[in-house]
Structures are given as structure tokens and as C-alpha cells.
Image (cartoon, rainbow, N blue to C red; front, top):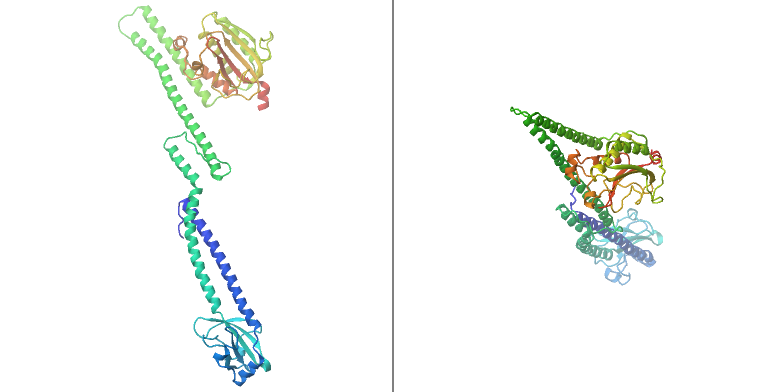
Length: 508
């Protein structure tokens, strides 16, 4: 079996050429058959319309027919007539010219195999000529076979065959030449796609296919490929960003662990020296060792918690009263911290920008321990990163997600989570401080792991830069998000947005 060419262009040219050649051959064959049938029918009509005169039969019996040279003046065209007597024997005399070999006829009328009125084709006595013959009855039981040569028909059909062969050859050559040009023109968008794909493979990932007309198959293919390229590029960028974050995370974790380990190692070596040390120095060394060990233990606990939340988060699912949760957290802060005044109030909404005196119930479904951890982290950050005496407000309430209320994105709002559906019923806890606030560059990084706007102060208080990352991960695990609204000189508003209890029930 012949192998087809691998090139799509060659396959198309070959396919078009074969189909067109088959169509031309079919039309030529039909024309040949129709023309030949028409020409033979014309010969048959002449045979049927011609009847030998009755005296010719008697002259044939008497042997007095004109000579072949003279009979051509009696018979029209190329007719040739052969006579048979009443016994079926062919007579020697015949009408017609003898310039060409006559038809091959039997000596007995019974052996002719002809029927009255039905012309038949027989071969010539010699050569490859052919004759059309018709049996005509005569007087007194005689009969005659009227014949006409098919030389004219065969000659015309032979010339037609040669003409068809020449036309077919010209057609095939023209089809190959024009087919290659047409196919190359038709596949030009694919050629451009191929070049663009080569450039993309070479590293130009921002290139896209130009042919995206939905009215053509190639255009629809280009649109689909562009969508695929966009997704692949986003996936590659996300992978690169993930790898960069992982490298930065490992580097930051190593740096955070190296600092307390170095301190522990140094003070331990100091304590193991053989010379006598004053009790105050030994106590100071032991205190620094314990302090750095505690700091390293907290860092390892945070890392383990973050890894657990990323891999297999496990949260309890029970109704949580966010108002009670916030009240407990505010009470605990008031007992342990006197440098910052923390108060509890209702949530400010566009419908009530000043806030009412009554606190509304705000419920959600989730893990109260984890949600309490988020609130404690936000209050700890407010006390740590603002000057002493800064007021901190905790606001609790319910509203619907939107740019003005929370849960969706807007300019000046920073988060590490996806937005919630617009107008979704939500329960909100806001921790608002009246501190110096953050500039946009710092605010965009606060939810990054190991990021600290004030590294020195964070280390003094034992922070590792993982608190807000853990809080944001817990919020996402509850179907909500943690977001920040801030500006220099306007303080910080950390907002914990969670689906309300009714929304959680509808989702389930």
C-alpha cells in the first residue's frame, strides 16, 4: 500500500488532484458513452430507414446485379447489401463497393443470429473494422442484410479519446500547480501560527496568535490556542511565584531559626567555660537561653500550624457567636494591657455611618478556637505596632458583601484571598486602630509569610511574621477572608469577613 505524504499541504494537494481527476474522468467517460451511443443510433436509423428495392432481390437471384463500381451509384453512402435465397443460402452477388473489407457474415441465414428490425455489430472479414448490420425480409422467402461500416464512428471516438487524454493531462498538471498555490494560500494562517509557535517556544511567551476570526475554523483554533496559552502562561507565572515564595519562605525560616540558635549556642558555650562566673552572669545567660528557646519553639509551632492549615485544614463546624467571641477577647486585653484602650462597638455600615448604641448578634458557622486565634492576633498586632495610648476599636455586626462594606475588592483594600460574591450576607469583625497606618507598599505585603513592617520591634515581642498569614489562611478555610483598609496617618482597619450563619446553611 503506498504511503501518503506526511505534509498536510501535500496531502491536500494530492487529495484535491485525485478528486478532480476522478471527476474529469467520470465526465469524460459519460461523454464518451453518450456520444458513441448517439452516433451508433444515427447509423441504426439509417439502416432502419433503408429498404432494398424488390427488383434487387430478383436480380440477385438471377445474378444480374450491377458491378461493385456501378452499385455505388445505386446505393446511398457506404451501404452494402447481401442477399439470401429462400433456402437461406447466401448469394454471391451483393450491392455496394468493395473498397474496404466487408462484414463477417454466415453463409446460412439461419446462422446469422439476427432478428428483424434489431441492428447488431459484427467484425470485418479482415482487419479491426466493424460493421452495423440489419436483417430485412424480401419477397418469396428471400432476405437481405443491410450493412454500414462504423469507421466514421470509431474514428470520431478515437479522436475523442486522444483529446480527452490530452485534456486530462493538462487538467492534472494545472490542478497540481494551482492546487499548491491555493492550498498554500489557504494554509497561510496555519503557517503564521507555526512561526508564532516557534517564537513562543524560543521564549517569547507574551506572543499570541493573530488569526482569531470565529467565522473560520483556523480562527476558532487560534482563539482556543490563545486561551490555552494564557492559562499556561498564568500557570507558569504562578509556579514561578510559588517557587520564589517557597525559596523566600525557606530562607526566612532559616534566618529566623538561625538567630535564636546562634544566641543559644553562644550563651551555652559561655556557661560551659571552666572559669568561675558570677551568679548574675550565669543567671543572665540562662535567661537569654530560655528566652531564645521559647522564641524558637513559638516559631516552630507557627510553622507547623501553617503547614497543617495548608495541607489538611481541619475545622470544627458549629454555630459561633462572633459578638461573644469579640467581648471575651476585649475583656482579656483590658486585663493584660494597660498601654492601649480597647473598646467594643457596633459595626459602621453605609446605612448607619455613625453606629447605634446597640450591639447586634453576628453568627457564623466554624471553629470558635481558630476564629478566636484570628481576633487575638489582630489585637496583638494593634498593640505591638502602634504607640502606647493608641485607641483600638473592635466592631461587630452583619451586613452584605460590597465595596463599601467589605468582602469584595476596591482600591486601597488589601487581602490575600479571593473576593466573596456581591451582596452575600456576611458577619464582620473589625479591629480598628488610630495609629500611623501603613503605606500601600507595606500594606500589600502584610499577609506575606515572615513579613514584618517593623522587624526590630517584632523580634523584641517574639513575633515571627507568620501571624497574619496564619489568620488569613484560617479565614479562607471558613469561606471568608481577612482584609486591610489603611493609609498613612489614618490607622489600620483589619476586617474579618465570614459568611453569615444563614448563608452557611444555604450553601450546605
